[in-house]
Each structure stands twice: as C-alpha cells, then as structure tokens.
Amino acid sequence: MDEKKKEQEKGLIEIELQSIVILKQTFSDIKEVKIEKTGHNKATGSYRMFVTMTDIHDQKVSFTYGYWKERNELGDIGIEDSSIQKDGTTNSKIKVILSDGGVEYI
Image (cartoon, rainbow, N blue to C red; front, side, top):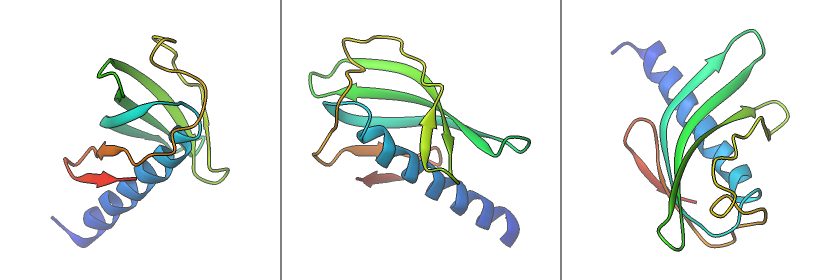
C-alpha cells in the first residue's frame, strides 16, 4: 500500500472517531458502536457512516448518519428504533469497532 493511501485511511479513522464523540452526545446508553462502512461525498464534504449500535441492554440497531468534519456535527441520522436510539448523552466509555477492524474505547 502506498503512503498516500495509508494517510487517507488514517484520516478516515480519525473522522470516524470524531463522529463517535458526537454520537455519544446524541444518544444515551450506548455500549458499543461498530462502523460497518464509511463513505465520503467530495461535493458536500460530508461523510456517511453505516453503523450498528448496541445499547447497555445488548439491544442492537443498524442505521446511518452524516458527519460534517468542518462543523463537527452530525446530521441526517436514520432513526430505526427509538427504544434503542434514545436522546441523551452517554458519559461512560464505549467500545468502537472501526471500519478497518481496529478497536478503540472512547
């Protein structure tokens, strides 16, 4: 893999982690988030995250959301199950499985 591709992947992982920080400020009771895939729209500068989120009761929901790095905000969040995607804040550390398979705790 060339250096440019490595830098792009590293940058994408940083974007994923930044978006999870905001996701924790959006939903309560998050235990784990697995980022299945991330896409970048060069025209708008936004990123689209495809995730599976697990709550503290081990219930799972898959959904997508947009993330704007410049504004550090989420948008266009797909609410698939409001009993799992509860408004609020998650203050505890959560496990994050990144799109490259790496694991972080935020």
